[in-house]
Length: 401
Length: 139
Image 1 (cartoon, chains in turn brown, yellow):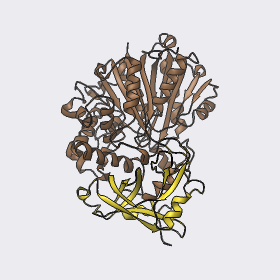
Image 2 (cartoon, helix red, strand yellow):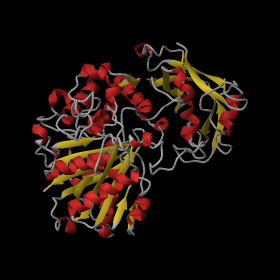
Image 3 (cartoon, chains in turn cyan, green):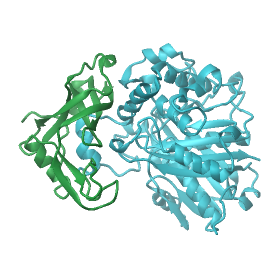
Image 4 (cartoon, one colour):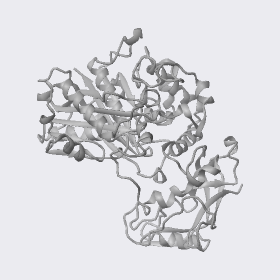
């Protein structure tokens, strides 16, 4: 009889690359990976040579080779921005099986630098398959990346549930409020970005239309980011100086790969992955004290709130209403400033993990530059990553000691 | 046709060719499972509903309804010249969905475009061999 992996492992460290955001001098994906891994090794005291397993979307083997290590466990699962949640899920299972004690999940992505680098140094294979279904039946119709797809979900949500653009704009406004407390957020202030600092619902509605009904401020940033977290067995976690953040629950699911196959445009597989994670944890939405929710777009976050049982169906944006999800609110959400206002390199899932680790370990940045700080007193967090075209999800229930 | 400047589908000769052969002849050909009788799209060699491998092709009505839509204000290549334009997912009368650039609508006024609108298919020759289906609002 297999044992429940709940609490078999913990996040024991989380670090970023030396620089994040708009790196004007330019970096490659591998540089961001290596900086982040170096930093998380220093933070946890785990030597790079002691890393037993490594996970990263698409290229874990390349990173291991670059580091000159020979891990006994690799996971190159690459299903978009939630890949890192899936890596943690699979690492937890491997730890629970006794396969390894220490795995590093790594991220390095040059959403911003790749323009300067002319598309080189991304760590990705280029080009797609012309015979793939999306190439034959979607690409001929002018879709241009994620916003041009996700907008269809918001139109359907408004039609099916009577929601409005204003409802979803509130998500961007509240998320920006958190960014004003995070000096590392791209949109922290006028000093970090000409359009930084607080915004209003009207600012969102009046920003440039990207793919109606999504305006510019409904959409995430495009930045550089490197990050790494260490997943360790309970025995190792209890031996380190850093505080463990326990993985009480984990789940993954997918509803489709191509948006052509999305059955209900107002629902995602986060319902299934969330239920799996809650069940493993023996906890429910009512036990959660904060949330980290993938916000590639306002619509992504709003729908996910419904799927995770944090609001009734059709009322996802209500989670952000009346300041409830903002600084000082009763249920903090996306305390780093989110993909909307902190940073988003293309695959945001690592940033969810890092912020959740910081919040639950009491190491979130605070009182910097005289600001009131973003550290909350939450001891539990529901965390969900979404990848692809609202396709794949990974959910974690994290708890502090 | 010679000046068609947008992405042109590359039919795979193993599974999807009957769809593109139909399009060239001005017909919307769809795959249907002879075991569960359900239509699926995109075309496959196995029914995604019941996993039977008995798939037949039939000529569909070419009618459907707008399931949801968006107005694209940013695009690449040949489509960049067309912004704003409307994209939509179409519920096919016979079942399942297709994606399209929607015709017969006012992209400048998205509020006038209705989910549920009735649409019909039409085909635009991109090359001699590849004719691309587009859907047009007819009511």
